[in-house]
Length: 268
Ligand code: SER
Image (cartoon, rainbow, N blue to C red; front, side):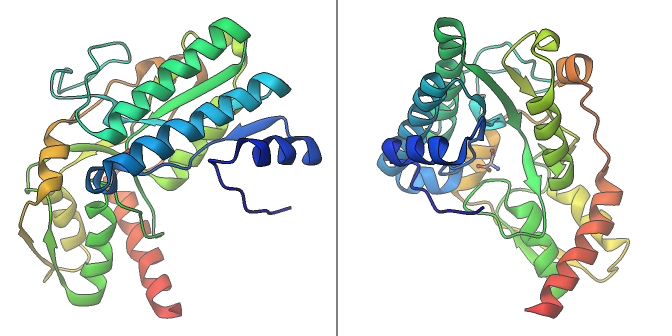
């Protein structure tokens, strides 16, 4: 069954849970980093109210909740390389601040009410589906522009490294954590990443398939957001506790994306 739901509508969420006998919620709805900085009030409202509603409904009906967090939960005073799960978290974007709020509120509901809350700090997720307003969107746009125009103007500088993963790895990580035994979970929120990616490296990987591909760099306001985030994160706890393991590296992701985006362009 498929149905629409406004995540701001707690009563509507309750009704759906009861009517469909729902036992688990994966809560993804969020205003991402770049759009959040353009409309902070909207970002604050949606990103806090939605997780509050989900946790309240989970408390009332004893549900398991997976609500992803993000590398955006870290900030300029967090360690930049190999950022661990537990460290200084003072993000400077509305998106990051509300992600930390969601993580802490989830921990609170877990401790106080026993809500089975779980979370993953997603890196940039790469898939042929058009992304909605994040700082890591360049890693998707670049494939579309490579195939459509043979050139791309990147909104981050060429050496800005950010953690990333393929959508299929993201789905695998999400399902693995959702199905993990509680006894194996030593914490409620886990870092996950497959590799770190700089625009320069991805451009070179695409050039092995499209040798004439050209990239120019024109950093905009999103550069400052990227600079405040880790360039790589330490996800050893996820690997140890519930067996996180990626399938895609940069080369196989590049091949897969070129194929998928090409198919998409043909059919649209
Ligand atoms: N992809 C997200 C963003 O760029 C990070 O979680 O906002």
